[in-house]
Amino acid sequence: MKKTPDKYLSPSVHHKYIMEQIKPAMAFDKDEDITTWQRKLRRKVKKLLGDFPSERVALNPVTLWKKEVPLGTIEKVMFTAEPHADVPAYVCLPKNAEPPYTFMICLQGHSTGMHNSIAVQRDDNSKPHEVAGDRDFALGCMERGIAALCIEQRSFGERREQKQENASSQMCHDAVMQALMLGRTLMGERVYDVDRGIDYLLQRGDADPKTIGVMGNSGGGTISLFSAALLPRISFAMPSCYFCTFRDSIMSIYHCADNYIPGLLKEAEMADIMGLFAPKPVVLVAGEHDEIFPIKATRKAFTALRKIYAAADASNRCHLVVGPEGHRFYADLAWPVMLKEINRLRKNKN
Image (cartoon, rainbow, N blue to C red; front, side, top):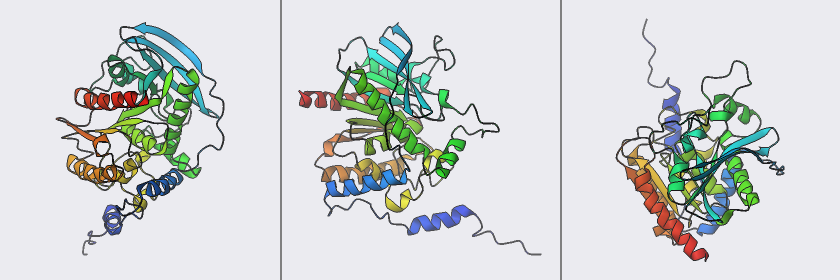
């Protein structure tokens, strides 16, 4: 008996064929007014991210502990994003700055959680924890006089699945699938948590509302990018190890399900999504040898993004920083570029 020909049996072959036929319907067109284009695409992206709460519930913030550290003060808090969805977070205030503080919202990726941002153990915050790849984001902020709000993302760290029986070994899988059945996406829920984090900062009263940014690596870079694109109160962004093309990253090799938004590639590529942030400053961080977000495609996407920023008369607000290694953050390369942008914002604000 002859073996079944396998040329067109793999689903990925068919999906690649479909992808090659697609020209995103809402990709940036230099002949279109950029403000009109941003408004239309932002509305479409928000719709694709699924249902958002129609009303904002009370935050009901509580302090869990507070301690002095060499760089300043760290306070662990909890606030409510929506009913039955609480958000643990660290508020990190640098000793070499005064309120109102410039804040960076820090987001860890697929990892043991937000505790990495302050280099302590997840289950015992009194014990130190060694953090690789400059992922101790909050400490990096405090060293530079920037306050940090470190949010625990849904399905990571302390918000990992702990109640469901027979849960998937992939930390985000069950939440992604359940959200889809409910007309939501996990990505949309995570962006909403960032929005509620901004609510919390403004309710505290010690944040400068004009200088609130967002940063994160990998899965944290994902939500940094989408939050910047959709949340108008964010003033600067530093996504790391995510910005690329969808075609060459999440559509080319295995990625966790929380990276996928139904129908998004029919509408826009990643440069278009990041372009919704123009003309605000963005520092994109990448690794020369990142195997899951290939640098060649990242550079290609950055070329497309620069065209959008040029149309917004903000070419000098759009930066790409490439580190010499792989899938990690590069603090010493990225922060000098970001600080120049933050200082410019502070100067213009005054």
